[in-house]
Length: 252
Image (cartoon, rainbow, N blue to C red; front, top):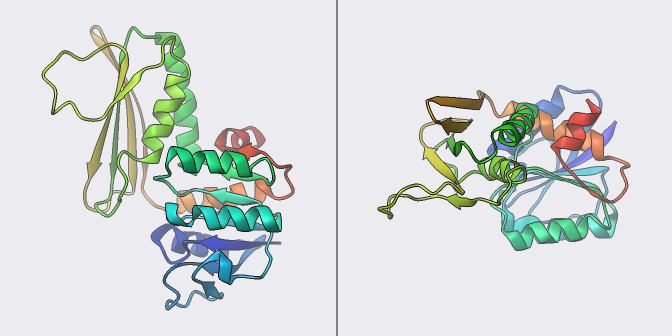
């Protein structure tokens, strides 16, 4: 049995983690961190990590980028491994995560779905085979309340593909302002926001007279919650390092 501190416990994904944890017999949530402390969740909720002086085996974070600094400070000072699944982080914040991972184990991924991890692997394999002979586009769709665009997963896929190409591509987010031919050295990334779409991602490889499409569709947030708990179970007692879904997939 391992104990979890759930950061962002009253958000959509935080509530999904709570529901998933309640169905398991190997873990429990002992404390939550959330700006909203008025909603009862069956465990104590604190406004910030600075207000919490307890201990747990691992942190799961589905909160807001503004929480990152205090989370990392608590994780490092207390030696508590952390699973960070919050999206919309800046480059400087990702650098903070890397620096903290030299002192405490951190699992960081923009998407906790095993299926998305496999999609990323397939996209990399396709990019290696096709090289720069095909145009690459990524289309992502999410619910109308999602704040960041493009999604962290779309950027995760773009970065994975980019690492396999002979020349690092430029990411194109908005062709509306341009009147010019598409360049070969780019990856187009497009965002759709509407309704209650949980998460859809499609990678398109468009060549001469043929198109290859790789896609993943999430029908419930439970897959991300379950993935985060599995990542938490994986990272406990790991040496300080930065871990990702690739590491978890290897252990499956």
